[in-house]
Image (cartoon, rainbow, N blue to C red; front, side, top):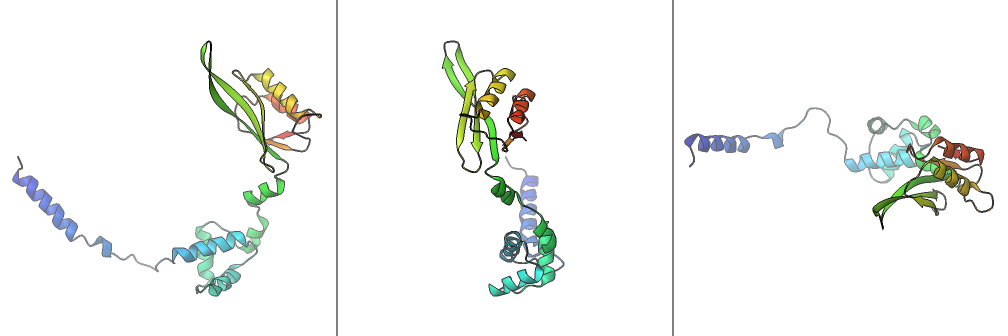
Length: 195
């Protein structure tokens, strides 16, 4: 059933595991800072982009942590955050979207499976969402979204009387081949920039 070699191998593994000592190993060098301090430094740097290292050190001192400006610099380097003058000049995606949200409209498809006389058919539903108001517009649905249908949907959505896309807006969509060149040209002709 069990050979002596199996028992000896198990015994050797248990002894090696017992006297491993790896949980007591210490790594050389300075210990890392508390994760809470690191999170605070990153949060301050992202929220207050004009604050330099000294200002962040002062804010940490106000909440009870003592760190040096060099430590703050090292933490920011580890998180790929530049110093204050450069941080001030960059724009985050959140700020960009917030500033331009009234001009941004996204579009995409979702699908629905519909039972018909010929069996199960996939319908493609084209929708638009206005980023600022989060209002969703269903443009149309079809089992075959070809170039002609997409061009007509572009015309319908940009019509002056009842279309919901207005000149000056930017239309965000993915690289799906359904967004053909005639769809994009129709949008451009109406003053909507496809991205």
